Amino acid sequence: MAMMIWLGMRPRLQGAQFGKRIMGSLQTIKKIQPLDPVQRDGEDCSSGSLRNLMALGGFKRFMSFGAGESVAVQYDKPSDQVLDFPGGKVMFDSEMRFLAESPTERIRCYRVLDDDGGTISGSVFQEVNKELAVKMYTQMVTLQIMDTIFYEAQRQGRISFYMACNGEEALNIGTAAALTDDDIVFPQYREPGGLLWRGFTLQEFADRNFGNKADYGKGRQMPVHYGSNRLNYFTISSPIATQLPQAVGAAYSLKMDKKNACSVTYFGDGATSEGDFHAAMNFAAVMEVPIIFFCRNNGWAISTPTSEQFRSDGVVIKGQAYGIRSIRVDGNDALAVYSAVHAAREMAIREHRPILIEALTYRAGHHSTSDDSTRYRTIDEIEHWRTARDPVSRYRKWVEGNGWWNDDADSELRNNVRKEMLQCIQVAERSQKPPLCELFTDVYDTITSNLQEQEKLLRETIKNHPEDYPADVPV
Image (cartoon, rainbow, N blue to C red; front, side, top):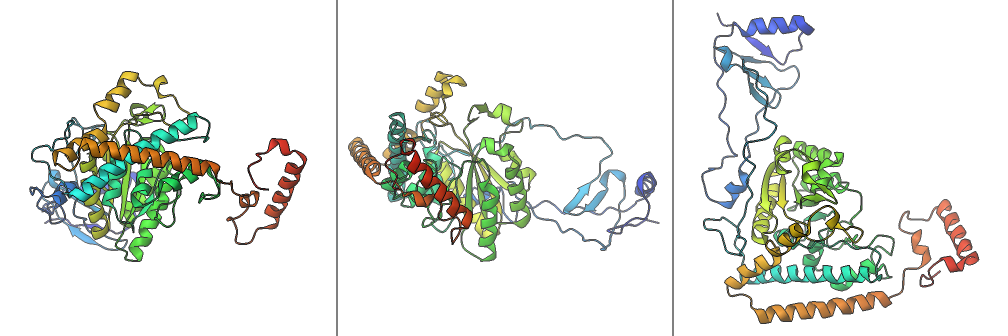
């Protein structure tokens, strides 16, 4: 006669006594409880559609049983025994098997364009028309020129600090083009392309970096710490990974309000070493919120290589560990990035699920103007990525191959952007600084007594030592 094991009831036996009773019971089980086959959300994974390409790794959620519920399970032989554990059925095994620390083959990287800008035969991607393709290219060029000029301005002592995104233009513009203005962006500090795409002007960028009266941060933030409430782009802050849990919270709010939008948060490979990354991933997976985690894996967290940052196969594998659908994409391929984010956004909103995208790219410049990357990586390595793997020239070849661009248009674009950029810097540089009182506003609705006291003391100090304070700040 078959013995029945009742799951979900709290056992009275403890420790070794309970273990012996269970092992003895398992040996007498006779009938098999077949496992449900793993499904992929009803999709035919052999299909060549982009949706199925992105859905690989998805699985059907199994029902779990709460406290006090009982389920009878019967088995026939030890090797086919299963445990109805909360979260899904688990097979038993009489052999001791440790999971390998890493797979024999690294997870593949989704790509559309080859190194010469040609479309790879059989590649599946989201089609773009001429208007969108040209806009993506012009924005990549604009971002590249803006970076170059601001970097030079810092070297001339005109601004205090700058961070460029040279080599990462494709992921900047590729992601921005696939989103809508209703999607909420939580950037790190190397994604100004998202603002540029949404209409943040070159003058607004210049005002922010010079910290003048027109700066939305009123001169209280470091340069490149952009933000725009109007454009759903949260203000950048320096601490690594703090924006990730915030982005999950925003996504949960969008879900509760039934909005047709998602939140998108960017971070580098170094951010995955922070606790905020793991908390955010788990929170997003458990609460099933519409969010895209976009990891900009450029190989270096300032001077720390990825080999010293983690031992896993990059970042994409971490998504699977948290139960998050994930994909690895060529971050220097604008079409691949655009297609991946386009599909990820659709899945995140339609299915109420988080998506992790790992973009493999390379920081062709220094980490910031405070860094000299030649001290920890070779010049040959940098030049190889700057030339052979340049995302802007690679995408330009594809646009030209479609007959949508030429040398004359390129020269005109670059000349116009450079002239406009230089003019914006001159205007920003001549503009008045925010008044001293702005140091104490925007924290409380009504300035508190302790802040009033601080302002009074500061004014007295400036009055007594005027030579120690900048003359261009209105007192």
